Amino acid sequence: MRKVAVIGVGLHPYGKWRDKKPKELARTAVEGALDTAGLQWKDMQSAWCGHTNLGMTAGARLFAPLGQTGLSITNVENASATGSYAFRGAYLEVASGEFDVALALGIDMQPRRDRPRAPGGLSAAPKPEKKPDKTAEEKKDKKPRPPTGPMVKFAEDTQAHMDKYGTTIDQIAQVSVKQHYNAARNPYAQYREEVTLEQVHAARHVAGPLTVLHCCPFGDGAAAAVLASEDVVERLGIEDPVWVSTSVSRSTVESEPELTDLTAATARVAYERAGIGPDELGMVELHDAATIEEIQYAESLGLCGEGEGGGMIERGETALTGRIPINSSGGLLAMGHPFGPTGLGQIAEIYWQLRGEAGDRQIPARPKNGLAHMVGLGGTCIVHILER
Image (cartoon, rainbow, N blue to C red; front, top):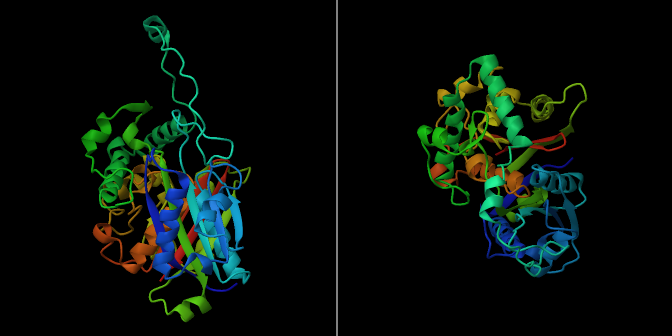
């Protein structure tokens, strides 16, 4: 396998962009990545498009306005980890020698009730006929829907961690405070305001001990990265390239169904292939759709001992100035979780941090390496380790 470097990244800010179309978000991210790399669209030999709800052949239709050059196009979907797998696909093509330069795009736009999409997903359909408003009596009789799915699981995991290890709700809520602090310094984040511990506790209740500020927002966004072989890096004279040290993908083992077990197993392989241990990492971007996940996955990744995640947060070890900064981007909790772009947004953050280009959220001790971790519904986990 050849050495592969990330030589350019680009993002469209995460948020709710009701007046924009997917092709606008895609162009912003792709052109940002190309500009950083000093390349043009015609230089791309392969392009991967990760998305969850933009319909069939979305990649071909999103890339066409940039120019139909005959390049290879692949679409990929893997739940929350979709963008991570688009990146992995591009990486493996370059590492194998199939192509010398490849681009990975992650993009999604949440479906709008006021703007339904056509089957292809990229063009708007006429608005449906408006249903009559409900009567006051009908509204009175309607019961609020109880939380379901991930929210309930996150709440159960939170309570279980508190009961087993003595983790406090203040420690768990501090994850949200930290993420919003970082996101307030990230121009691409969906939420750019700091919050206090009191605000996290007082926010709208979701499930169990969790309020809405314990949970990530969904929205729209796009992220892209350009990957190149070592020969291309040398030919272009790129300074401070960010190398992909390893990319590891695994799925759930029947005897260990929890994503925490899967994360630990995937990380062990990644550390072995990269030739480092968790204590040698300079930063981590991990999946935190809820506050408890940062604590759980920090433990699974070996950043602290079992049951010690809460204390690590409380001591400030995961802050920008801490021993092992986690989610300097703001994470899913505050930067946002548009699904398709999320994993590639992590890659962009590590790229900027390793090059010392993260602005107001730059980790003072400029990291030499960083780990990106994502899990996907259904039982997949992917870990990338990048280094300079």
